[in-house]
Image (cartoon, rainbow over all chains, first blue to last red; front, side, top):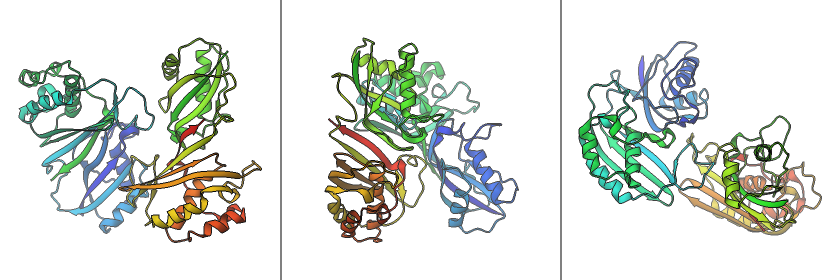
Length: 245
Length: 245
């Protein structure tokens, strides 16, 4: 048995998220089905750095799996592409140590969130950027973001359905770059809770619109209550960009 | 009756082209269906500046239609959006003279063609740029393009199925801009024959790869034979960009 680490990219539009769900088209089930064909019907389970929700994209998701096949690294990419649908791409396949684990060995992640600042609809970006027609004060959003950087209990910024007990995470960076009508958020941290990036974006957008003051972020964090933060921003603007090991 | 001129954009991916075909999802049939709903079941026919094929996109297609409804211009956009699918966007609706005709009044058109220069697949651009993994000599392609600019019989550069007798057209511009891994072609002319832009792109790409010499373009034009030119480039890289009146 050889353990492999693969870096993959997918367009989340037509998937019911990453994780296997009975009767649904998911990223995990498509890749496991391709591996099954490659292994003459044997089941090969994959593990990812984490799940992504329906509609969420990945530029650099990481998975691992074990295989008895002796295939050179670059041949894995071609062999899997011939069996995978076009909305999943294997960017890289590497041999990994037998104890490498895509989730438990991850030291951190980068997510990006893309907004198209316009009140005119656009058919080409509708699945890839969140269209937002309101004026934004980006300086106010950066002020708010400064309160969120660092180590905090992010209970207020994760889904009320979050099952994890320990909601303390460290955010190293929140950056916002505006380029024409595109606003890109960049989040880097040691780990992210369920819906955390989307709730951070939603809350920052409300601050940018003037519906919240930047220093409210302190009270939202301290309150440890999901209802204090803003709306969850749409899934289709979100990209799992990179996983750090 | 009032004649309206609308500028529309569509993502061609999920359409069997612009024109109505029985049992197929087309741009024309979706818009006519929306207009039918808006007119309480009455049929309203639309006319476009020209057809686009399956998979071809539009950033600035123009259509016209006649309506008995008294609706302000900006309300047309909202009313139609509420009835149209997300892959068609009405950018603008304007009152037009009763004799305005989207096709016969068009003085010229601009098409663009987008190529992603890479041998790595990308799930996000797969319907919007043509992926091309070969090295290209863009200077050679510009040399070849210079032979094509001007007024010529473009029989060699249109589909053998073209029914139009007069294949003389004037190409005002062919430009190529490379930005990172993206190569954009811009074609402006008084009119374009069936598949003409895609065959021009295919032939220029073969020149860029060194499979043809730039000055071959003279003989291809003179031969008036489709088989002399290069392959028809894929539909999904092509955009009807603008119609001039």
